[in-house]
Length: 116
Length: 108
Image (cartoon, rainbow over all chains, first blue to last red; front, side):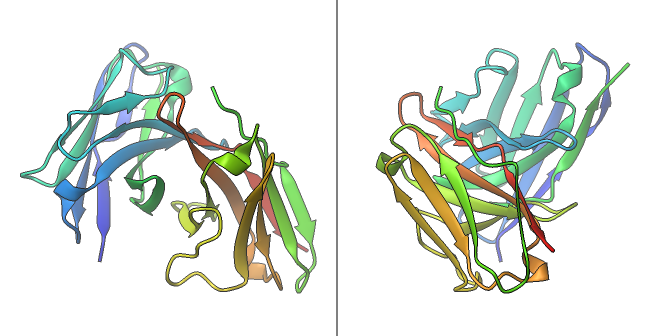
């Protein structure tokens, strides 16, 4: 059974940094793209970033490019999102998802709250 | 960047057929995926590649895509289908994934 489990969310001040992580199991991790998708309270889904199988290709939504960094560790079956210079409007649940063009499996998400 | 437009809400009675549209410029040339999200839960893929159903998704869910609109059709709607539905495509021009704004399906 495919499982994705996010961790690392919490409260951070505007301008601060946070790293969220996703532990994967139940599939051959190194064969798949992975992605982060976020959802602000009461709002829709927004794709944030994705990364290819060996980490050599990374793509970001324009609003986070230069501040967020996606990475993966195929030895530990994990993917991470380093978020710097966070903004209040980036308060959201951050989901990890397996990316096969569609997002066929999702984690339960981790809440990131950006507030003073 | 590519924009996907969905109606904010659709309401109908149990047993009726729901059709949720996803509009985009020449979306028929792209591959569309659909997600169902119930309150407090993660999204679930219900249609991929325009019209394919993942295992475990009822046959009542179907999809189509042509011209400037893709459509998610839910036949014989049930109370348990009440949820937010999102369409999604891959924008080849900048390699980004794009979501529609979502449609809230209410079963009266």
